Amino acid sequence: MNAVFRILGPAVIFSVAVFLQAVNTFGQNIQVNPTGVNVNSQGSTVVFLTFGSLLSTQVPAEGCWCGELVSAAPNIGFTCNPARIFGCLPSRFNLSTRSGIGSRGLTDIMSIPPSVARRAYQAAVDGDTSSFFYVRRFINTAGGPDEFVNVTCRMSGGGPRSPFALTDVKLSFAVDKPIMLLKVDEKVPPVQAVIAYNGTGRLKGRWEVVLPGEDPPTETDLLTEATLPIEERARQRRYTQLSTFNVFLAPDGKYTLPGPDVSRLPNSVSGEYLLLLRIEASDEKEGDSNLAAVGVGLGVVHSGAVSGFPLPVLRYYIGSGPDAQLTNDLTLLLPADRVFLSVAETLEFSWSEIPAADFYRLEIVDMSGRGLLSAVLVPGKEFYRAPPWLNEKVGAGNVRWRVIALDRAGKTMSESKWRDLRLTQIK
Image (cartoon, rainbow, N blue to C red):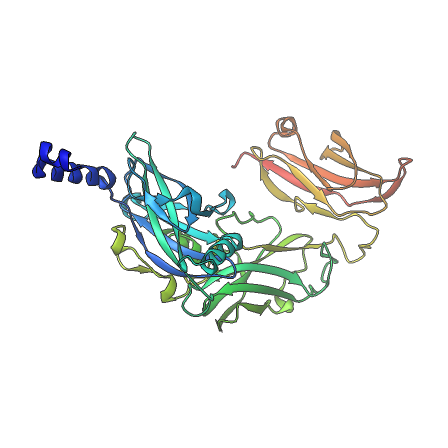
């Protein structure tokens, strides 16, 4: 090294050092907020992150957790030491979305699995530091270097200083039935939601119901409001509101939320009903993300009650009449009676199970009774997806359908009432 210093001179050596540093930092535009968070060392954690100053050619790739960072040269930033990786973000939990001014930002929901927390905790027990890192890689599709951005995860007990986040939600009826089949005007059993969470804050939201024939919610509609970028939150589809709630959750980790008043649950029309738990974003500083700090907006995004998954849906079905014998009679579920469907949609039919049935026969006819399709199906799924040619055959018109349960000899055990549906050109 001394020989090299004498040959090249101090000025040249300094220039080389500056060049090598520039290789690792050139173009390092991406920022993240928050840069560090407290996470639960004994379970899962969910955190709302905002990345900013992305180029239009930069797209997010994998996100991983590790106990040590190393230089990413010749790429930009610092990446995980391959020998110290605790795990990577499962693709099913990847909820990252472009956001902010000019779409130069990225909303990323960091969902730390319990397995990662356990490995980080065990490493700390073995003498490592009590913090670890989340590293998100961004690929430059224009051929430039990849960029790595990291967030420090400080292990804690998941209490008041951790972001308020939902880690699990279970909806259930008070009655233990796999499928809730009811007669028309029969009262729907009470409902509850068992919620596991980190941190502490106000749980605000509402109960809504999707009526038969209405378009079902998308996966985005089922996310908590705090999981979405701020500009997307007002765009979630809304349905018939049953009741609201606003309760403070102490840092206990679990809460049972009572459902809406059962007298408000609709039950007078046959069909499938979807009961939705809608959670609104609440002010909670531990999970705040500062948009101005990363150059993609003004102010702070409140993300109290963020979650890394769509909330579950509770279904119940109302039979075709008060005389329906739910233990023996076959009840049609979907499509609802007299519903309008687009000719561009794939027709899907479902019905209730008859435990003793050996076969089901689905019959579809036109309004004159002429057969259009007949399918014999084995028990198990109680579901049939019609072939595309049926839509072409029907065009824009009305059809009727029913399902018949048969025994092994082909004798009718039970049959549903007919239902009508109309195919339209409207998409």
